Structure formats: structure tokens, C-alpha cells
Length: 143
Image 1 (cartoon, rainbow, N blue to C red):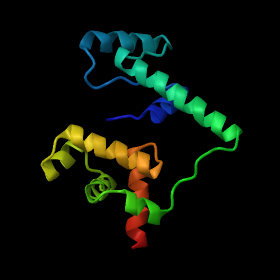
Image 2: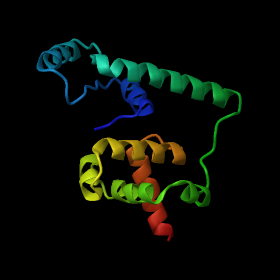
Image 3: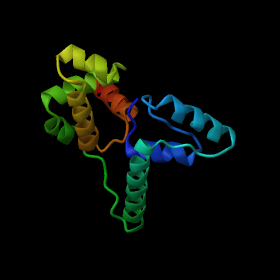
């Protein structure tokens, strides 16, 4: 599962530990022991994401305090901004399809799918695949 910085911060704020699926067995074992001791294990790869997440949350809080919070673009505007390929990928996300399966469907690299997903989230001002799926489902119902 890919986690964006904002989701990671929210998860960690709620006391959930998060490790990458590629974590080494020794690190996994140490993390389990840490969790049992009520410590928050975090893999080195996730440390950078956590720092970014904290920065994003801090910037957002400052923007909200100063009244600069950005509104989501209108559906008409975002439809123009999203490329046809991104529309296809958004549709697949709404169906619950994984990045790997999307890559196979369109005969593209999984890394390319991840880039498309990031672009979709940015363009729609969303923070997770779940939000993108909800957005896409709402768009389908509105047609």
C-alpha cells in the first residue's frame, strides 16, 4: 500500500505503527518488540515521509489560521485538467484496482501508474486513493 505524507501523519497521530512491506525481517522483529513496549516503531524509509508530513500539516494549519486555505477546484475545472490517461486510471482506482493491476491493464510501468496517481491527487486537491475513489464514484453518478 502506498501512503501519502498527509495520511501517514494522520495514522501516526492516532498511534498506529506503519512499516513498509519490504521491511527486513530483523527490522520487523525489532518493530514488533517496540510496539509491544508501547513505542512507535518507524522504518528509516518512513522517517523522511514523516518529516514531510509534519511540514505539510504545519503549512496547512498556518494557511487555515491566516485564511489562505485552498478550496477544491470545481468538477468542471478538474475534468479539463485531468488527462485522458489519468481519467482511465481514476476510473480503475474507483473500482478498487491496485497500481500493479492498473499497470498490467494499460501495459505501463507500475512507477508510471504511481506518478499518474500522484498527479490526480494533486490536481483534485485530494490526499488519498480512497478520496480519489469517492470523487470518481460521485462523478460517475453525476453523468
